[in-house]
Every structure is written in C-alpha cells, then in structure tokens.
Image (cartoon, rainbow, N blue to C red; front, side, top):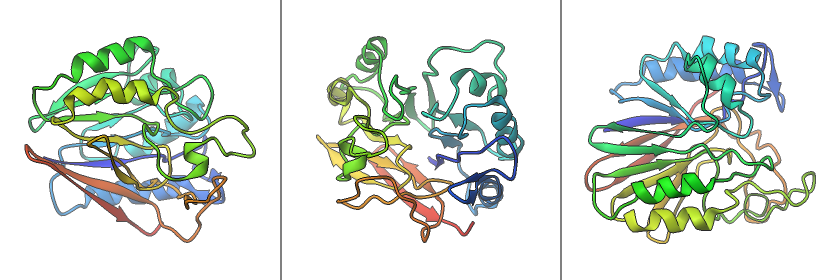
Length: 263
C-alpha cells in the first residue's frame, strides 16, 4: 500500500502571496500536477498540516481551488498555522466543526490514527488528556499494522531551535509536542505494530528511531528551513527544493522515499 505525504504548503489569501520570498501557490500548483502524473497508483494523499499561513478563510478558499484538483482522496491535519474550524468547513465541507480534528481510517489493511496536536503556545504542540487516553486505547500490543500521524514533532531531532526552544525571536517556545513523553508512553505498547509515526511542521525530511519506533517527517511542500546540529533559529534554506514523501507500508515494514521537485 502506497500513499503520498505532503506538508506545510502555507498558502496565503491570494495567489500572489509570498512566504519568505516564495510564491507558495505556484509551488502547490506544480506539486498537484506532479502528483496527478505519478507513474504508479497511490491510495491517497495526506497533508500533515499548515495548509495555509494566516488562519484566514480566504486562504482556505485559495488552497481548496488547487488541492481539489488532486485525483486521489486527501486527508488533512491541523497545523499551528491552521484554523480548525475553517479547515473543516471549507476544505472538508462540514456544516459544524469539532474542536480537535482527530480521526481514524483504514487503507490497504493498515490502520491510521490522526491526532490534532495544535497547542496553546504557538508554535509548540499539545495532546489533551482525552487524546492521550484515546492513544492508549488504540495502541494495544496486538492488531493490524498501525500508522500514527501528527503535525508537531514528537521526538528530538538534534536541532537546537526544534528541540530546545532556542528561538531568539520567540523566547521560551519550541516546536515539538510539549507533553511528548506522555505521547511516547501511550504508543509504546504497540511498537511492534507501529510501522511509523509521521509528522510535518519542521520543514525538512527527518528519519529517526526512538525507543524502537520509527519516526519520519516530509520535506516541506513549500520551503525548507536550516536544521543543522548548531542551528539556533529557523533561517530559510534557499538552495533546497520543495518536496514530498512517497510511503510504502506492508505487513513487515515501511519504506519512505523523499522526492524533491523544482518550483
């Protein structure tokens, strides 16, 4: 079973909106065209958050005009730049919106558990007690292969501004899930079932194993950020291209391919 992960598209309220000098609308148009022309069949596309950049309804309307062209089912997560209500009503066509967009689905014999990790202190994430309880119920030792999906990073990534809150323009705030240890404790019983825990948010492709569980992120589908072991702040990495992940999952394991494309 194969699917596509895209993330952090950061569209604005008009097609000419620029993020750090980059036209994110134009990049998304190219990405959608590329996905539609892939020489293999993917089950679906999952967008791991930050669909837009400014939380406005206008930006979601712009995003919908492009994303609805994808010729495959698409699932969405809420990122720290997203508005939960607008995302559900405009992109998903819901008449009413849940406070947290948590849900589960199954594809190709694999269970997916999607959690809304938007926090109270942007840009960090947070899982509420009821979400931790649901995670514990899902993450039993036995069952079908399992994928867990969040927007915020759940594990250290060896980058100061991601891991330790070393953001000089946002003192005391950091990027990962604040109660990440609770998250890890909740999923650990299912480590033999879990094929991967995937996330967005960090504007770079990472792969790491933590406590016997495989974690990975996708390159940003708009722009990458500097993430060296001594990076103290999220500077733009202008020489790197946008990208996405092609993910293959089966009963025995997982393969994650990062694919980049010229904007």
